Every structure is written in structure tokens, then in C-alpha cells.
Amino acid sequence: MDRVKAVLCSRNRNKARELEHLLPGWSIDPLEATDWPEETGATYLENAQGKARFGRDVTGGTVHVLGEDSGIEVAALGGRPGIESARYAPEGAPAIEKLLGELEGVGDRDARYVCELVCITPAGEEVRGTGTLTGRIAAESRGSEGFGYDPVFVPDGEERTVAELGDAWKAESSHRARAARALLAAFGALVLLVAAGCGGSDPTSNRVLAAFFTHGPTARVLGERFPHQAGTLKCVLHDGDKELQATCATDVSLVKPTRAVVTLTEAWNHGASAHTWFFFIKRDGTVESVVQEGAAAPKP
Ligand code: IMP
Image 1: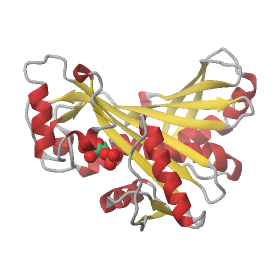
Image 2: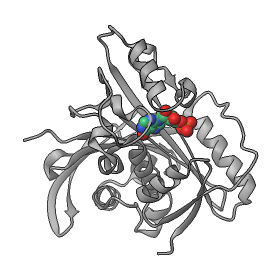
Image 3: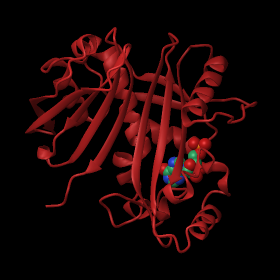
Image 4: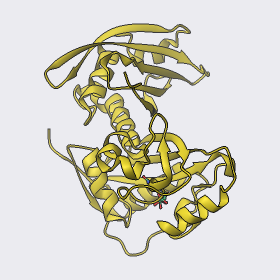
């Protein structure tokens, strides 16, 4: 399959490299532009869309354009800094110091990272993927990898900060990695299921999706019928040469006149990590968006 040629609408060249790693088969260059628009959206999605649409205007639809927006939300601060994360304080030590200062003596350390990715195809179709990573804010800064708030963010199920867990861990488990997989899954559902194959980088999630769409009640059928009943189907996942038995539980909920949410949960029994995908499906069977949540498997 030809590489997908894309530009990332961000001045941050590291993000383009990081995303290229997260979206194998894609070649991603940073957008060359001089007059960048302000980030004025009220949500991550609006900001990511703003960046992608700006890139679309600059490139004129010759390539895929990606817009990304992310931030950290701290429960005890009412979700701040949120979409203001980049402007909260200069990135790195100053932002961390300010955050730890605001949380001094605060018992509730719950927080989450959020990433929203929007892709506009050359045909003008807009596809999105959301990824979150839940965790808590540590008492002090630890570790040297990653960037931003990583030295004080401890993901659920871990004792170490993201900066200690490192870039390899981030490539697999960060909110950006999850958003990238959700984006690929959305592409998979929109385009691939039709052309059979995509799904992207993570062979395990591809197989789960493929199993879901090909062997189980398909998303399209679910989308058309919106049955109010859960189903569990067996599927085989491939991890390298190994075949692993797994179950994928599906459920249809939040049925509205025009759309439903299909939840697909990949079970623990392949021993890696549990994932849940939420497919927002329109009544015509097309998938509007896909959100992926994930959690590390419990240690034996
Ligand atoms: P953006 O460039 O407007 O998306 O700003 C994102 C901001 O959120 C960054 O400047 C960081 O402060 C924070 N942030 C987003 N993702 C991460 C991450 O993976 N690690 C640490 N901080 C992050």
C-alpha cells in the first residue's frame, strides 16, 4: 500500500516525528507556513479542527492534513489548565512548579491527559480520533524523558511518572498514541472496512477491529438496527507468530434517533492490555468518530 502523505499543522517538529512513529505507513511533514492562526477554540476538537482547516487552505487538498490539540486536566483545579495547558506557564520546570504549588496540601491528585486529532483527507472528508490517559499528579518531579507535565504525571496502574516510563512507553500508551489508534480505527471503519486492510499500526487492535467487523455482528448492521442487546464474540488475536484467544464484548448504547454508540471491549485474556473503543455510528452505518480508552493489564 502506498504511504499516506500528510502534513501536520503544528510548528512543533517533534510532534510530526512522534506522529509519524504512531501512524506507520504515513509520511508526515510539518506544515510550512508563516501566518499561523491563534488557538481560539473552546475545546480541543475546535482547536484541532482549526489547525487542520488552516492546513487544508494552505495545501489546497493535495495531501492529508492533520491537526492536533492536547492538554492536561486536573480534577482538583476544576479541569484546569485543560486547553490552556500550553499557555499555563512556560513549558517544563516553570509549569510543573506552578502546578505543584497549586496542589500543595491537596489530597485529590486525579488528572488526565487528553489528545484530539483531526485529519482532513484530500477529498475533504474529516476524520477524528480522541485519546485520554488517566492518572494522578505526583508529589514531586521525577524522570527525564517525554516533555511538558510528564515528570509529575503517574498513569493509572503505574507507580512511575511518564517521564520515568519513557518515550517507548509513551509510543504505546500515551493519550496521543491512543488518539492516533482511534484515528486509524476511524479510517479503518470509514475506508478500510470497505477496502479491507487498514486499521493501522497496531496489529493487535487491527485484528480486534477486523474480527469485530467481519466475524461478529458488523458495525454497519449494528448501526442500521441499533439492537439493545450486548453480545460477546470470540476472536483470535495475533501477536507476532502467536495466536491468542480473546473475546470481544460489544454493546450498543445511547441510542438516539440519528445515531448510537457501539462499545467494543477487548478482553484481558491476551495478556497485554484491555482496550475499549466507542464507535459513534450514524444510522446510515457510517462511523462518525472513534474514541479509545485503555488500561494496562493487571500484573500477575
Ligand atoms: P498544544 O500544543 O496546544 O496541543 O499544547 C499542549 C500542551 O499540553 C503542551 O504544551 C503540554 O504542556 C501539555 N501536554 C500535551 N501532551 C503532553 C504530553 O504528552 N506530555 C506532557 N505534556 C503534554
